[in-house]
Image 1: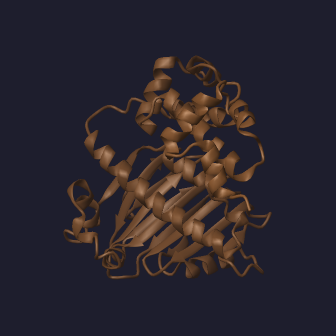
Image 2: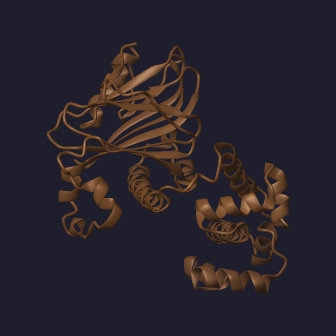
Image 3: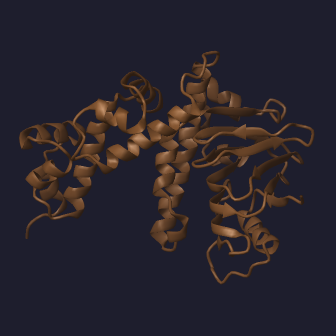
Length: 339
């Protein structure tokens, strides 16, 4: 199988390679390729953000096994931040290295030095929602020289060169915070200036989440992974159930039964993945939904209280003020002042 050669910078060059490889002409002026039916379905995005970040994002399925080969043509180390939301993908650096599986919801960080190969393999007819965010380490730090001197502790392992640090590979733990960010990105809807500004902001937050998770992984080194892939998926389904059934949720046990976990395992999972108890996660979700309804609907406060599954307007006001330091009524007046 002939790999698709990807040049990390500029990403536009990669986009043109995708177009050529799939033998597909696109009229889209944006770096988004809608996969032709004979190849698969979905979209590929290849985008440069300034001169130090690029992202390749696949949201869809490819009908034949495909290898993406990242080429580093610069004299500087490239860092890749990798994540997949739906199905596992496979990764290797160096021709003689074995393929390593990056599981669903698992994050990885890889350093790639000059002329080194880094490959990602996508399986046939598997649905992917995956990205590789690449940064040119030297340019990235130079563009942030106002704060790069403050890199300390475990992050030095990633950002200090030490002879190129070309053998750095971190196949880390599961992270559902990243999955939540990905859910907000819809590359098929990108088109306006503000959409791309939003995407840029999300890319920076994704890098931040990888770094946070890396530090957490280092702290927990040597400890057995307490959650299986099945349990992580169940907790992810629990978050979706909570978001979609706020009015119906009365107890934590109700959520646990819905996703097939016992209460203790559900609580353990939320504590590990979100640093929140299930009850606090439900409460936080209720406040986020309430804020959105106050901003974007004409529902009364009593109706909002019912929609988010609470029984008391005064209790809702107390919780909302704890979260946002303003009462719901004052928040709505400030956002929509009366003439």
